[in-house]
Length: 370
Image 1 (spheres, rainbow, N blue to C red):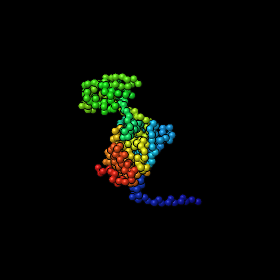
Image 2: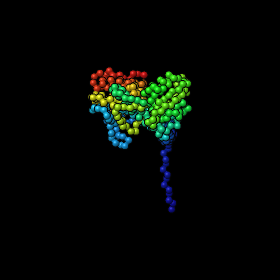
Image 3: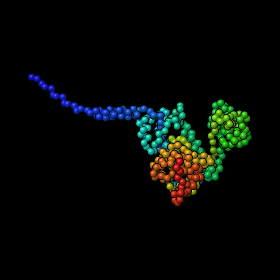
Image 4: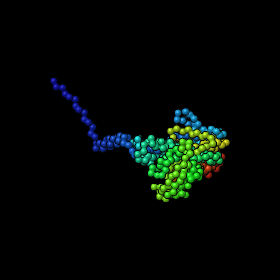
């Protein structure tokens, strides 16, 4: 007896066009898998957290504390918001984003894809960049307090502190980080501009006697003046300096895990609002960004488009921006928020007064076309 094997069913024929489709699909899948793994030499800049300077924030210990607290001076109730803006940068030399992440970010209006070298110099690690940003934030807070008090006519003193010396220049080994410079050739110097003016007056080939304080002891050191390697016409001694202000009362700014100097203007406005009666913003929701100097000049910052989206998403209706950023922001202001360019702290306060009054807001400036 013979047992017959069942017939093998005939397989459908695959057309040439379908074969090409399968090949394209397979190639696409393999390409997508590769893109999800291959690192890209870019970073992705995106909207970051928004912090109201008139409200609370989390300190380094995880406690909820006032973002700005003033001790030793009369303060007044505030309302509305004066929010500072941040950006989050995805990617670092230690953790490159993938090409798939870069492509995805490229099509988002609130994201920006930028070369990594714009954020990290060759050989710089993420940790080093974070440390540098933390120093910038500390300096920005001091400048903001100084700007606010200057605007209010409250007197304070300033000192020049040596941050570091330049290798190969006369100051190396003669002054040390932390030294406070009080005088130059017996003339009191309150800021870096005073010191530079005296060095310039003496000129290359001369010397200057600095009166310093080191470890609470006054000393005098004589330092030669040479030409800068970057500019042969500029006389220098080779000192990196930073300002140290002595204020008549304590202003504490609590904001952990945020670096950089772009919050300066909003810190200054938050301080002024607390130190003056009434509401500086008229109770409105206002956000802003911009560096600040002790003299009240507002400087441009990075990530302006991403910060505009962060402001809009936070519920702010008004956005104070540095005038120097208008070229980047024009045409990219998201719907639902009104930008107002300023270049001084006085200008920002004037804009807030218009907002508070509720009249004439249509006459506030816009960013002009580049």
